[in-house]
Image (cartoon, rainbow, N blue to C red; front, side, top):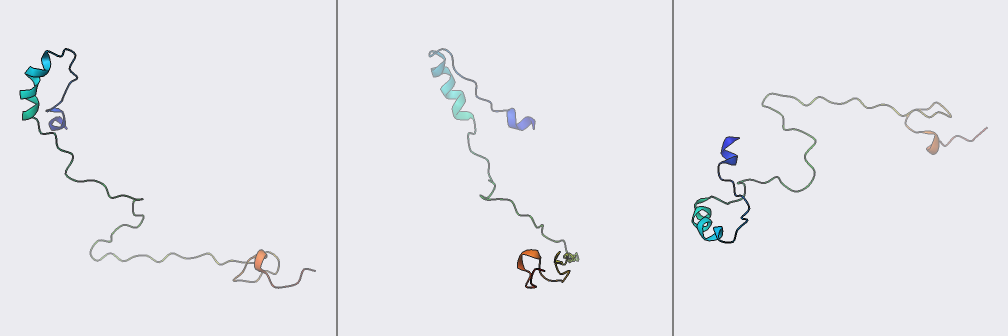
Length: 82
């Protein structure tokens, strides 16, 4: 963390100081960071380690509240309304 603040540049107040500072500024390494984050949203799934197995998630079964049948809900129920 200390290495990040070694080459700091401060604002120049007097215009006479610009000539003196040009030699110092040429010694500083003013390059952007070596790597950048890729664009877009970060990945949600992580890469598995060697020998690690992905666990299967159990899904909830949809149950209709009208006819109590499995595999559909009330909005798509085919039974007639009593």
